[in-house]
Image (cartoon, rainbow, N blue to C red; front, side, top):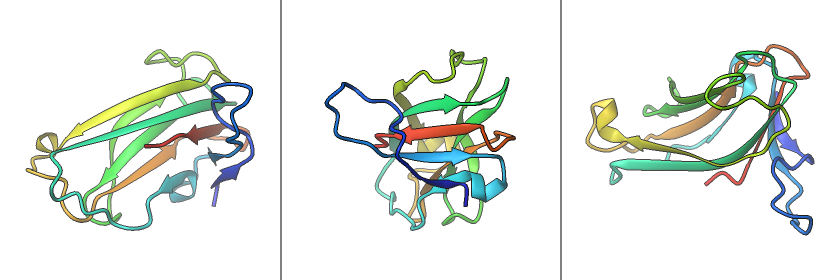
Length: 140
């Protein structure tokens, strides 16, 4: 797989930060270019989901994109709920730490009352070369 732990920490908050690991995703190879929950999450009592994370892009080309995707059927299918493309949406600098990126999802936007009992989230990239990398950290 192309998603793995990396010793490059995406966004150090200060020089004394002891966290030295991040999730590293690179090269567009479908599911191999993604990091996802491997188990279903019972979100049947939730009408809202909030995802907060830090990220850093390295080696991306114009319009290479990081996607956040949601599955409501246990990972059988995913759909894009947010994306960050280089040179758009305020993402212009490689090597810049984007801290506290926040995505809020409302179940009603998916024609549902809740997110059900088989919810999964996945980060995926459309990067097209081995040296195109995304580092994800502090995912909440």
